[in-house]
Image 1 (cartoon, rainbow, N blue to C red):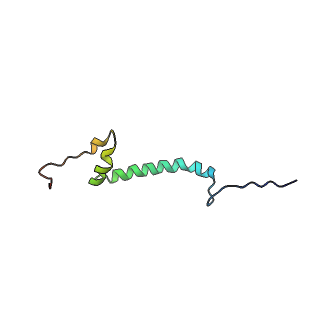
Image 2: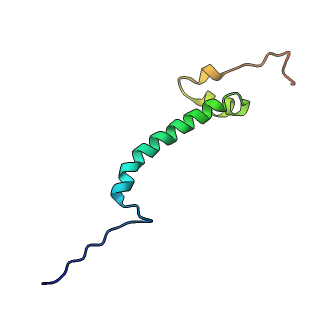
Image 3: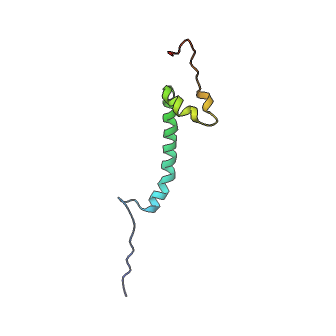
Length: 73
């Protein structure tokens, strides 16, 4: 009788089953952190103009026109 060996794929101790279990959880946490960072950085004008105003439905909420008397140009 010959012994059959099975090769278990793992990288640094992470098997495909463990990775498949953790990817959705880490994705949700990463998305929540990203949204939280955007709202914390909301007062910065560059974040407002470049990122938040480009959101399709909600972008007009962050549109803050500058009064002509306050504009340096």
